[in-house]
Structures are given as structure tokens and as C-alpha cells.
Amino acid sequence: MQDAFRVLEQTSRTFFVPIQRLPDPLRLAVASAYLCMRAIDEIEDHPRLQPHVKGRLLADVSLHLQGAASEGSLESFVAAFGEHAAELPEVTLRLHEWALLAPASIQARVWDAIASMADRMGYWAEVGFDVRSEQDLDRYTYGVAGAVGILLCDLWAWHDGTTTHRGDAIGFGRGLQAVNIARNRADDFAHGVDFYPRGWTDAQMWAYARRHLTIADRYTAALPKGPIREFCAIPLALAWATVAALEQGREKLTRGEVNEVVAKALHS
Image (cartoon, rainbow, N blue to C red; front, side):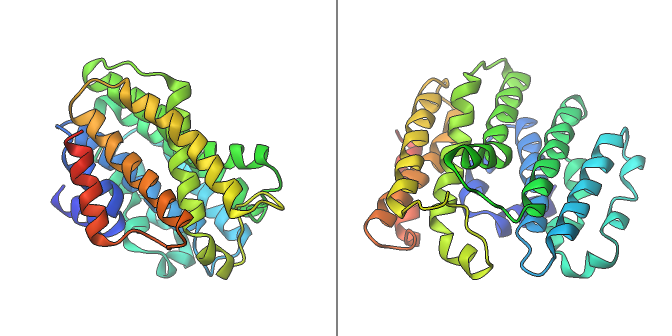
């Protein structure tokens, strides 16, 4: 578990703190889901793998998880990466370990979410992330982030019976993903990828992000005070601050700004 949180800290500035603050066993379930998602995200975003290779690897991940019924059934997971294992990062190669972090009573739900996400990522990778319209953008942001919001709803309910609005949870995921798309556009361009609908300006993407972040505000405000609300409030506050920075012509928040936003979110 300690090693898992070492890798978590290396792979996410945004989610490490809020995940750490969750109570067990919820903390393990969310950490398991996040690390698995990060693992497949590294395949989707890999700069050297060809689209058809990404699609095949992600399909193999999905099939392994769909067929997994026990710890033993995940032993062959690494073999699925085959000749490409040397090109993949630690977080991806250890995906089977992260899958087993989730408590047994919620493991199947986490595995199902990761399997479905891998299938959707594989589709987008194979079509070259061809986002032509706002409807395509909605499909993509749902597939890689909105659906995460629905998983979180299930995890909250499993942990302590907290019920949430699933439609608003989708907006929560979409809003965070839209901010990531806007923030990372230059890097995506460098790799020949553009998640903006054709003809869209930065201002249109910022407006799309703000529209969904407003839904995310509603979702978070409806949560009971405590670690679950804090978990959502921290990345949401960072997303709002990032949009503001982008609109000011800055690429990202400073470390001092990040610390200030997190502290304010924890005391709001």
C-alpha cells in the first residue's frame, strides 16, 4: 500500500492530497481506481505507440479485467503488454497490483469501470482522437472522465450510503477533463493530437469547461461536509483557478498558487 501511494504521488499533483485524506477503506478503493486509470491513460497518451497498438493493448487490458475473478486470474496481466512492456511506465506495468488494492466488496465495480474505460480509450486512440464537433467532445469527455464521476457516486454509496446526482457527477468529470484539454493543448499539438472540435478557439473551450465546472460546483455543494466533499472540492477549485490562469495568458498555476487554492478549498 505504501508503494502504491508513492506511485500515486509521482503521477498526480491534483489527486494525491484528496485521496490521502479519505478514510479507509474508501481511500484504498479510490486509490485503486485512480492508479488503474492512470495506467491505461499512459497507454492512450503514449507518444511512440501506433494507434492500432494502443487499441490492441487497451482491448487486452479490458478483456483481462472482464475475465478476472480472483488474484490468481490477474497473474498473466503483464504478459498482455508483450513486446511493448519496455516502453511502458511503472504505473502501467503494475496495473494488476493496483486492481487488487480495491477492497473485495467493491473490487468488481472498480474493475468493470476500468475495463469499460479501456475500451472507450481504445476506440479514440484508433480513430486518432478525431474530435470533430461538440457532440464528439461530449462523447470523449464522458468516456474518460464523466464515467469516473459515476464510479465515484457508487464508491460514496458503498462507503457510507452517501447518495449523489449522477448527471451532475458526469458534469464534474467533464469539467475537469475540459480544463486538462485546454491546459495541455500545446503538448497535444506536439504529438499530433487536437481534442478541440474543428474550428474551436480557446475561448470556446474555456466556456465549455466553465459550463461543466458550474455543474460540478452544484454536485460538490450537495455533498455532506467531510472528506468526500473535500475530495471533490480540491480538484474542482484547482480547475477553476487553472481556467482563470489560462484566460490571463498563463500556462499553469504556480506551486504557491496551488498550495493556496488547496488550503482555501479545505477550509471552505
